[in-house]
Length: 359
Image (cartoon, rainbow, N blue to C red; front, side, top):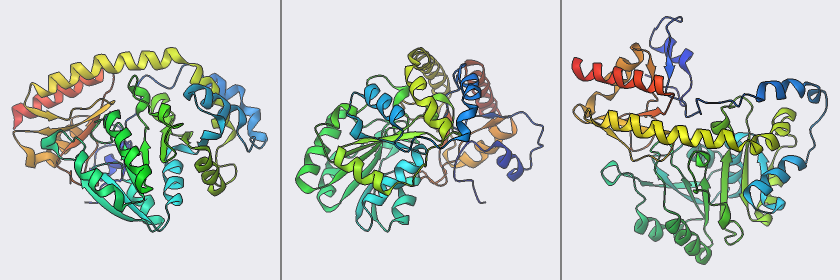
């Protein structure tokens, strides 16, 4: 079967599994905030309609200034991007033809971007029996051989987080060996006090990738940014396509960053719901990854070889999970599920209880 490469495609999955179009599906496959978009966004975009008749400011000065203030960095250390995907490919472009280390399983676009720019890659596996923790000593050993290390924090799809102490050690070693560390923080806004932006000023070999689409549930707008040393950001900007960010995306950045109440409410929701749903699922004999993000990996510990059957069972019962057939090291043996609303999470738990009875 040709599995879709990303989540968030219920219509495609219905067609693939021959489900009727009218069937109600709860989409647990996309790692988006179920509380968003913010209530004010629709009216804001409507009021900004006239901006579509003009070219955006090519320097995106208002957005850059807002992001710099929000992250407490210099404006020259910020680059606005067309979603996290453009940030990943711009980062890879910088290391074209060189050597990279990638921690697997992780977001598939790092490897794709490296292949696009002819970067030789080597994988290091994060193992479920170790809680998908970073094999720190092995990474430190490999670092001098590479030009760049790609890692995701919190990691997609495991939800695990490399401790800041280890990140600092990797950066210090990288300064000695001229190795960069690219950290994708696409989900960092869901977790308190996790951002590495404070390290940008001290480590010129650090590049942070960010996404605003996950927290605010605006994947259709495509909005992200990069944080790094000003010299590095200047070189990346020179490779960026002119006007890669549209006027609507540019217009809403300052207001998104001002909405602290929305972010705080989201973090409170995640803390409450994550604890409830993960505890309920684990009590039924399912493996749940030690995630700190708004998603987690799941496997039926009693029937670990029946993950595809579990996927189909849940889907036919109205729950769309994310398969893991294109995550290296997982090879389809786990499902990734997002944290959704309390009602939706209860429905998921109920579906898993039925699976447990039926198997």
